[in-house]
Length: 501
Image (cartoon, rainbow, N blue to C red; front, top):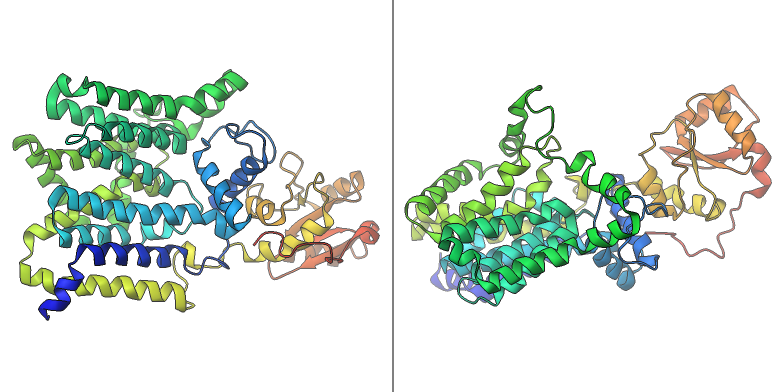
C-alpha cells in the first residue's frame, strides 16, 4: 500500500471524523420508516412520551398510572428532548440511543488512545465494538442499554484520567450517578469498579483521597435522588415494586436447589455471538489479568476489573440477556485490539487498516442505500400495527380503551398504544371464545376490538351480521359491533396523519 494513503488512514483526526460520520449514518440510517419493536422499544417510548407530557420529571408512568417503578427517569428525559425536537415518533424514540452509540464509539477510540498512544490500536478497538453487530443493532433501537453503556464508559474514562488530574473524579461521580439514574442497580458498577481499582492501585490512601470520595458521594447523591423522591411519594409500594421485582434479583434463593450451571449463561451467549473476536478476547483478558496482578500494570488492571466485576456479578442473575453487558463491550474492544496489535507486524497492520475502513463504508451503504433486511433494526417493525393505528385513533376517544380478542395481553399492546396514542384495555377480560366476546360487547356497545384477521374472518363466517369491520390488513382486524356502525368515523380531515410515525 502506498505510504501517503496509510498515513492518511492512520491520522487521528481522519479516524475520529470518519468514525463519527460513519456511526451516525449507520445508527440513524433508514430509521424514518423502520418503526420500533413492541418489546421493549414501544414500552420505553410510551414512558418517555408520558413523562414528556406530565407535570413531574421524577414519576415515571405507563398508561397513566404511577405504579410502574421498573425504570429510573433519565433515559426518558433524554428521549423527551428528542420528542421536543422532532415530535413524538419512532425516529425520535431511537434518536438518543443512536447518539449515545456514536459517543461510545468515540469514547472507546479516545480511551484506547489515551491508554496506549496508538492510532491503529484505537481504530481497531472501535471496529471491534461495531462488529459483530450486537452493539450496532442495539444502537438503532429504542432501548436503555446503550444509554447505560455510555454513562458507564464515560465514568470509566474519567476514573482513569483522574489518576493524573483529580478534578476528573468529580465528573466520574456525575457520570456514575447518571448511570444509576439510567438503569438503577446496574448503574452502580462504575462505583464498585472504581473503589476496587483505587484500593488495588494505592490502598486506602487512594480510596480516601478527598476528591475521589467527593466523586463517589456525588454519584450516590445523583443516582439515589430518584429513589428518595419516589420513596417519599409512594413509600413501601416503591420499595416492593422496584427493589423486590424479579428482574432486580441477584443470587436467587433457589441457587443450590436448581442447576447452578446457569451462571455460565453469559459465556454461552458469547460463544454464540461474539465471533470472530472471542478467542482473542479471552486470551487478552487472561493476559491483562496477569499483567495487572503480577506486573502491577494499572492500565491492564483497570480494563480487567471493568470486564471482570460486571460479568461475574451479572452471571449470578437468572435474567441473563447479553445486552445487559454492553457496558463492558468498550473494554472488550480495547483488550482485543491491544492483544491483536501486539501479535501483528507493522506490515500486516498496514494491510489490515484499509480493510477495516472498507468494511465500515460498505456497512454504511448497506444500511442507507439498499433494501437488505437483517437483525431487528433493519426490518420493518410493527408495520401492520402502524397501518391500523390511524383508524384506532379516529374511532377511540382518549379515555376509551381498545379491547383485544384472542391476543396476548403484551402483544401488540405497546406498539398499538404508541402509534395510535390510545390505551389498550389492560385490566379487563381478554375473551378467547365468541360467547365471551359478545357478552363483553353487550356491556359496551361502543367498544372497539382488535383481533388477528383470520380470527375475525372465522367470527364473521360463524356469526354473520353481528360484527362490523372498521379496517383490516394482512395481520389484524379492527372491528366493533354492527350496532355501533353509525358511530364509526372515516373522516380524517381534522386529524394530523399519521398519528405517530
